[in-house]
Length: 295
Image 1 (tube, rainbow, N blue to C red):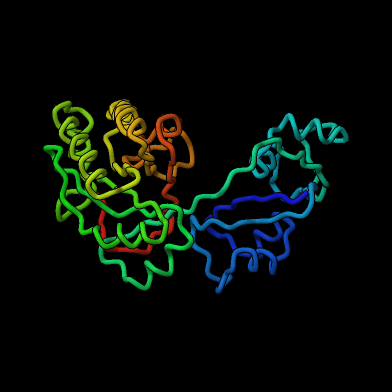
Image 2: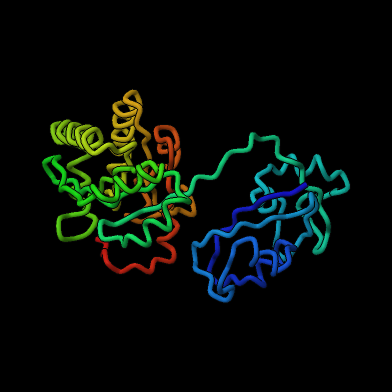
């Protein structure tokens, strides 16, 4: 059985340590991921790990729980597939486990790409063939629900000509500034502002020939969490019947109750319920682009 693991690079990782952890040759990891410089891994970078076997060799500090998460299965399934494991809480270093094959429907992988208005033509043309969607960053939401226009016409045209769906992005970035918690609060609590915003979004989607909407509202006050969930539900109910795809960007939380202004109001369960796509912004763990500052 060939298995696939999407591994997110963490602090201190190297190709060597990942190879040892999963029992996959270093040269295979490098080849499968087309790594030009395998010595330069970024925190938050995703690596595709291909395994040729349904067997797993236990390494230091691993538990049935961590192994189950690694392979997308459950502890109960692991125990059932390994009757020789008498004590599931006492695993032996180097012990081999049988990994049960997941009985799930295979899905395609969608690749997300963001583009700023000043993206170079060469970069755009060389990237579009690999994207099902391209998200044009961004329309700034003003406190009254109107939108600051984006210079997006040429990128939309190029995307459509390449058979790629352009996605409109709306953000609570303050004009000339950064993500603004107070603008988010107004958007999420003032019904008249929401009505104006919804009208402007649908008008822009229609006139610009966008195929969907990406909501990127960040640094929301924790007390506005439920207001944000309701906002997502309303936007979904508005746009889905019109045939638009709707997506959201969420902070890369390591736990449901992670503390911090970036994290607390992003409810993964609600986003999964109301959105067609959810983009987890793991690039926040290794962000190199310094054009924007965040409040």
